[in-house]
Length: 555
Image (cartoon, rainbow, N blue to C red; front, side, top):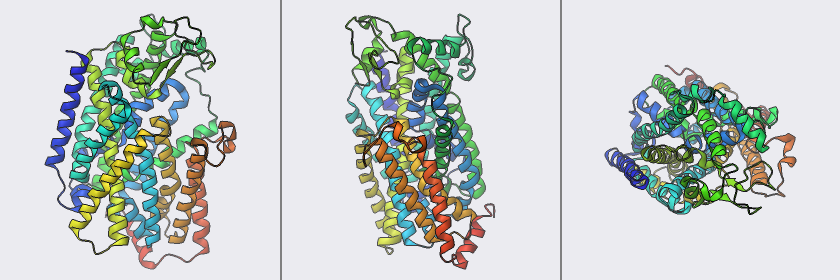
């Protein structure tokens, strides 16, 4: 069967499954829309959380970035997995004990202030829209290659699918759709990796294969280092970033993870606090399967790419090169007009430009795997992007309908009215998400890293001190959140968008990249919060009692 037929078949079947689940699990009230009626079993919630967590950044972009920058890419592995453990152990059980619908709900109640709630809503919207931009970009990348439409059209198709099951089913529909999406994406990620590992090294397990030797007895990592040296690139297994920046990026990703509202809200959907811990354990297991495979895919993809295109005649390159060239994500500029591809580190000589987001997707084609494997990967990439996009859109929708309309603007709104508002909010959120997907500020993983920085700078200190520090009051929390968020936004827009005079990496403060600046902004948030807190009055007694109650998660 031809590749295009396989793609339409598998993608079509997966989309039909998602739509069927959405219809079956449509939400009938706000409790089902926001938190799936608190009836999700721990293993299902763990699987849904893993799908929510493993976004287009994890599936499409993470291995792509690692394949290009090598050792420096380990910050994504360490930061995201470490952050999830931090979230599961430190925050999730306590927030579930609180028992509300959203993160702004916790902020508003804990800090006894509509202003605090409003600031939290603003933070949630900024973080979620930044994050969702990466997901919609990922959808566009997949559609542009495999369904042979341009990236913008691909984004529009993704918007339509997400809109259907997010608006119809809310959290209930999203949860069970994500269970199906996890199954699709993990098989899609593993099967090509197993194939390529076996063909390259003889090992079926990719985690072992990429650290092994090839058919000539040369270790793959040594071979890749040698190829990099020949082409003028830095050593694959050595980093170029400063240790300070590596540390700050890792911390920003960790604490940003622990502050992400679309991940936190997943733990609100289970029946009991103990189920929150169980689902966290299941999710960690499901996440580990992909995250331990990504470095292997990165090594296989990088090695195969260099050996396939470097110093090869352009008119003799395999069909996959032409396929990706048509998308605009892979370009060849024959500077010396010799018809031979010069892929080197020197930008004056280099003739090949590769979008990092295509590496995972192109890998099966480069390795000449069967068409059904390539089609399965396309379906998996779409599942990864759509699952996270749906969770983020729900956060946006609930922040507007529940925290803004229900809690601040119109407290007497009816159940039906709130549900309608939630669905209308989801509709407009999808439109905005599509815009950011068409005009993203960078590669998928880089965009997502900025979202984590924003979450670290705004939410994390307020949540942690809200649970573990009774003295923290509304004045301190509000001041800290605003300071951290605005500082991170300033730094991000200055060095990513060129606002406020712009600047290059040489102008970074203390050599800190925008992706790592979230740690600095978070620490500033802590300091400002504590200073303002001790300059103002203590929280009311009932709030202190609430904190004491939250701190005992199993009661």
